[in-house]
Image 1: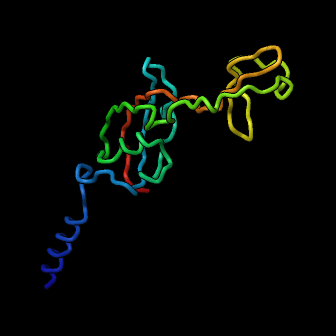
Image 2: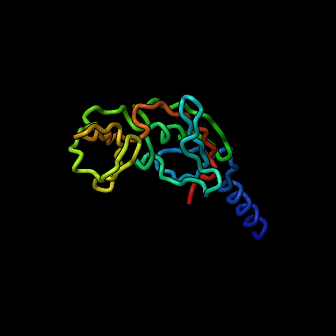
Length: 157
């Protein structure tokens, strides 16, 4: 009886242990990834390099759509490079988010290229005239196709 229990225990343990190759990411998983994001011209705009891996719940809306979708099906230790169209990243730039405001409504000395904050959100100064300041409230990466190099570090908490 003792040997039967040992054999059953060994079978149970063997059935519960999965090697890293058998586990793939699915919607709802909590994952840890390292990544580097670049623009079409190769300019790096963000990276987890030198930091802890990024962690998020797949499919929970915590990431841009294209990044979220890219990790589904990945296995621990796997690396991939994905190109994400603007529509699945930060969306297309919306011309309605570019407005002219009276120069008197912004701090003195503002110049094109400056970043201001409106209700806690960054807005970029894209032009200044004698009387107005043109502000762009689109996300800085709106309208841009992005490339991400992603490495799945871990699945689970």
